[in-house]
Length: 291
Image 1 (cartoon, rainbow, N blue to C red):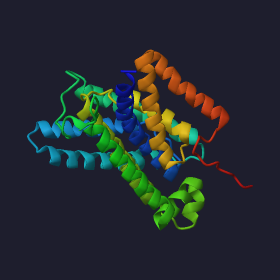
Image 2 (image 1 turned 180 degrees about the horizontal axis):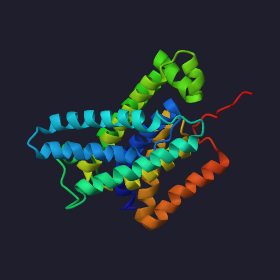
Image 3 (image 1 turned 135 degrees about the vertical axis):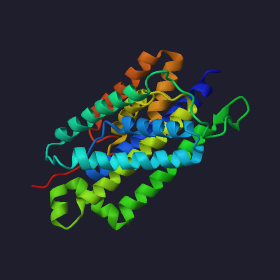
């Protein structure tokens, strides 16, 4: 029983990061219909850019702003160079491209920054947290949850209450018809890719602030984020956050009372069971094709 509450707090901390990364995946999928498997690598590049700028005597807040801007530009360039020139009605074609991008970015980051890792990262948040007697809820957990909750509300409003959201839904449903209707697919999709890259960079910065900076720091998070997002539905923005939190808590509890190997099995076992029972996810919406 003494291990339960620390395990829950630890799971909430990691789950908040998983949820925010899953949110990045779902935003891009919901807006453009693309499942981006390179999202973790995009965020990692952004974190390393911030780190290098901070080492060059640039103030940390300015380094963060410059790194976020560079990551947004990288996300836009990925769409312009890798995704847009090769349009395909086959989703697996785009998935393979994002997988190839993940491998390329991993190789680049390893080539430039792998030697000497892990690295200490500039402190972005105060240490400690809210004291609840025998437990302390870290500020990283509270900030990540607050950011993720605010993003869920903001993007839910954009998707459901604005003209831009209607255009995003039209693009995700059928890009070619959306273009025939006058929707500027390239500009909107480029913006969404930039936003998704920024969200991933935020996860990388929070992860590096909590632990240490390394080229592989988001590899495990990517697996758990996709598991959480798919379990609760790739079309649900709240489901992305809930799925990430659930994956983090399950992973922490099983790791505490059993082992990390069994924890991975538990998370993906839950994913398989959910996909068998509800193929669209717990909170996902079924897509109906009219013929």
